[in-house]
Image (cartoon, rainbow, N blue to C red; front, side, top):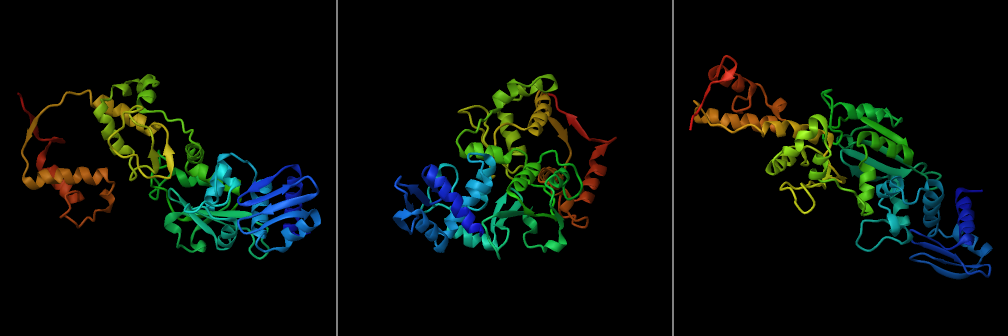
Length: 381
């Protein structure tokens, strides 16, 4: 028995238990040992079981619908789960309640025949800094089973033999731990994922596990958002439940939350799209970002940073006098910008025109520091 015949027999068994409607195919028994079959291009009724079976196995236009139904409803299962929704997103399939329908005009969903053709060469999606390709396991003898490849977006044009090829999802933990320079990554959704690796031929569950190790909870939160039940904890709620050394963060001034969000929660620093605000109905000034997956609450890094800023903001502002040339004053701004934008390592040693150049900074320190401190005087009012 071929894979298609197995799928057809299973489909008929399900139709005998009740109407089948999935991704554009509809099959229903009329109770008199005949069936009604429809797709966007085919409409047949009064089909006896043997005739229906011949139609389902004999018409090329129907094969993509049958294989698609078998893959999702029998092989994959998990209807309503985040895992299933994510895998369907990977191949531009309709999600959630739309599974009972075909692709809607104007949306990005693909019909089963369109996906069949695309899966032969692979359907590419991006999830943060991950490039994901969904494809058929075997194009020569296709039975609808999918496998998935996953690697860094920067390696999209790199030959596989030049990458570290992996197949165990837990290996993703090590990849997510350090950046290209071997530094620890406290924020897993920071845009600092290192490249040079590839997972190939993953099953659907293995792909979900791999993504989970690299970007924890992103699939689950994305799925909650898709279903309209993302539970968002705003800053006021998060700050109120802190205890111990973090109890002080609710003392951070309201305006400082805007500076915090601009420092930590923009696209250049985190791939999550911030959905939490200061409070419900009290939005922060910086935009939440354009990331594909939502951020539902201030993370541990934000809370830790907020503790430090709450302490610093409790200090009284003072006015200082110090001697600087105009160029030296501008150089201070250059230094702050370079550190804040993380481009210090990109400044060439010979580029002394850049105010954040290491030799320029050392010269300024030699000239304006006294006993290791900036030579400045506190001005009395």
